Image (cartoon, rainbow over the protein chains, first blue to last red):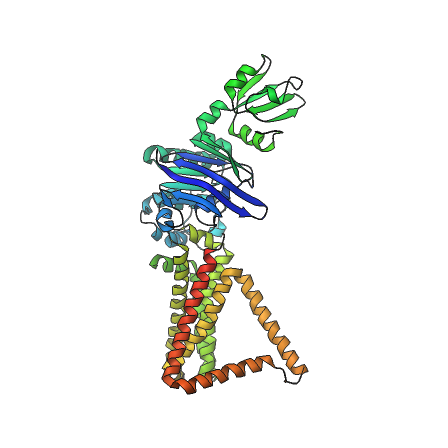
Length: 288
Length: 225
């Protein structure tokens, strides 16, 4: 399977934060969700892929090409949405489009006009007059109008109303089915990823905790609910984190099959959501 | 390159109109006050040079570098486009001044004195001096940095003036500096002759621009956005 994005041993040092030895790859035609708590390094990875910041070490290949040496060629095939779109505030959407569109050889003006209409965006309005959600929609319209082979979306659903969020996710899913595009999607809203992602990469404190197929994660990871007096951390195979409450203990395991066999009849094993995984891995009392 | 220049013009349209208006108003008003053509040339040159710097300031204000760097182009191309657009705008400023002077009474005489090889080279020299010095500085420290730099220069000048007054002109470093420069210019002019001196001026303008471009390129290549 060809990878559209391949990251190897990536490193970026800041004062007080280091993105350390990050490696993962995104196969062509799939959606990868990048999740992790605030400050984990999601945006740093995306900025490094887009060459907005310099890396200290490592390698990034997009469409098999080095992201710095073949920068222009690669970016012509990427649709990019920043978590906080940086368009000139005092310029109308029409002018912004006129400034940006000529850079993309595959710009589809009809599609752009259609998206503007669907997203209810007035071309004559200045960018500063838009709400955050509308700004995101405009950035999405730009990113989706040039037949990009890879969409890189940094928190694209933040600030969007639930109706549009679901519409957007459906649109992305359709894009995958019909045209085999690829998407790298960073978000805090893990339910969005449960709807559409094929792969999940979890990052915490600048390091990759895991990168795997979503179905594999949802199949193997589970939440064990047990009485506080019966709980022993060594007794749960694949334990990644737990929390105690007055009602007992909830524990996250990455080996649901083994945990199922090790538990007593009174314990409950439930499928872990991505939100559970993110919570226990970030805030749980112990993580492996 | 054409796309990059077009983008600069679209995103900075309002600034272009404002600066164009300022240059036009200045070109009309100053001859009425009977200022010398040299003074007019210097002031229009400085205003023109600040137009491309204002592009950089806007980019800084709107964090436009992140937008620019997400487009299918390289950072080197972005910087080259900023210099090319800058020179296009500054040249347009010169043409606008000349066009306006040709339309106002008494303007033709000024145009005649401006349209000599010596005047044009001097004009380009002034523009280059401002543009080539401040643009890399803006790129590194942002527009606020430029303002701090200009205010610091003012304060330094004031301090020098105060010191020279206190010591009755014996240690006027500014005067000494200008005397030194004009002495050097006189020596070069005498040594090289008029044509040689003008050629040296052109060479100096080119070197300033090339140096400034490479410094800007290096600074921008190292910039984290």
